[in-house]
Length: 178
Image (cartoon, rainbow, N blue to C red; front, side, top):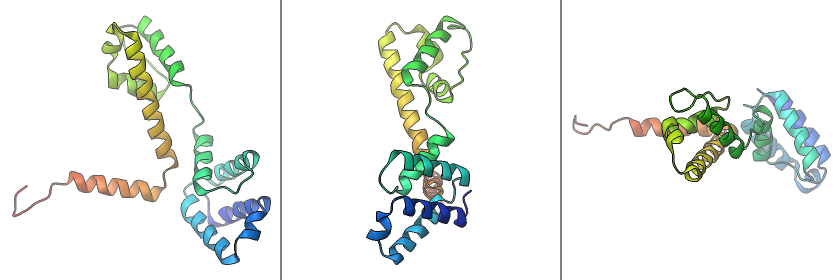
């Protein structure tokens, strides 16, 4: 996890590289921005954050937002996978072997999850490959989006979501009854 000194050093590199930020902001505004960065980037590994910073510098002429750095860091940790269409091709190969009665094996976790969601036998026995393919691609795309959202999500937000979900699951007792 990046410590305050590492985040401060990265911030200095960026404010130097994007010199306009120092001209456009007052010292107290820069200090407040650095504080925000320390709160929102500290859960990312320091080396990954440095690499994300260098990636951003190589791609953008503008000072990065926290969101941009978190997204770049997530892409370094979990680089882009194959496309849903490529993964459908792997599913089709498994339909041929091991087939309906066998157990398919997938390297990609999302592919395996979508196949479970749809049902292996449903996929194998489908008479409408176009529709099954579309369901697979839609399911794969949605799971990929969700995984990417989780990868850039702040730990504080994830904790809040978890607390709200747990509160909803707990039955409310009124007058000693559920």
